Image (cartoon, rainbow over all chains, first blue to last red):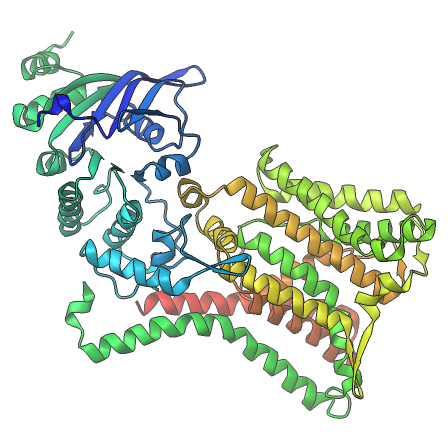
Length: 263
Length: 338
């Protein structure tokens, strides 16, 4: 099946976002297919995180359309996006350190048991399902009862990813998932992304680390000053070209010209 | 990852400790209560453990217990409610004024203080979330003044004594069981605390309150309606403050405009002594109860020993500092051993 005939699992069309007088995004479009890992690169302030927060329902776009599996959607909150299978792993992880691992994984979607007219949190189910899910992702922790504040950076990242994938996610968006990790933990997170891909989940990876991009991605797109700048399958590009995109140059030659042009 | 280098028995011992820590967290404060009971018994062996003395303690502390549990809900979200003492007096005076005017059937009067509390709590919650005032300190400092001012306005600033028996029942009634007279206020507090324990520990909204206190951003991106949950926290705190007003009114058979001055500080003290964190997300209902008991027993023991009331203030201040310091030490030890 060629890419053209498949329906993107998520698509953004001509998204604009203004914060007051500041234009964060202008006419940005994006497509992601099932089982694809899309790398999104760009300099600080290029609009990567803003675009992802729009796709995850945290910000409403000023204009533009979002389609999930070809259907036009409108997210009023992260809950709407999560209900459609769009999950995001935030750069600061957005975990509650005072709560157990399983409570974080199922935060906002707790396991409940009905007793009469009332619904109560079902801790036994929560602990069991959390352990099963972590096993599936091959993530090891001492106990799912541990509070997240007791975990290492890599384990926290793993918990954040576990939360994003706990319920039939179609798309997982990751904002700099390896930025704060020790070297050996980076590999684990990237392999986790490959696992997600194997399960048919579409992944959008924002990263400054080209090593990450070139290790896991199928396609890479660059934003520059809030606009689509360039895009290519990974096989058809190389590091130097991508570095050029980040700096706003279309080709290595142009990039070199800019660097050496003292005017 | 460290697990691989441990023998299975070490791992078991470790996981046992991981399981035990929450219990130590929860029950450590009870040791302080037991210590105080021991001190009371030793210093006043003939008086302290008598039913006449002990049965006074629930009545004397019921209002603070009600204030503290509501305050705890707010503090769990990393908030604060300074208005509870004023809510108490506004609830009390509204009820007393309506009772004097015979505006409502006495049985309906019982709901008035709670509704007043809910009203002020709603105002606090909306001030925080809709007006986006920067910190709950601000809006509740505002309502601290507003509610006390209103209480004086509606009553003309003078006490009103004599309330219908229905209004007095919760604060002053007793349930005779054999020879023993169980204070109704004790039953009220027991029901209230069990209810709040179930709510905070076993409902989704209760867990969301803890999550908001731990990391509001995490709660928000997890699809929790943070604003609505916060409003609920302040409404609950207002409602318990209204209930406290009803209990005080019942106990004193009156409404007096100076009631509840500084009561917010006693409530905060009980919550903090009970092990809750000012930064939110930590603490338990049992801890709050223990905190209330520590303050109540301290006052009772000092009264029995004829210690001047000013010394009580000094000692309660020291207990607050000591309790939090012990907590700091324990946390430091806990993180150093990991």
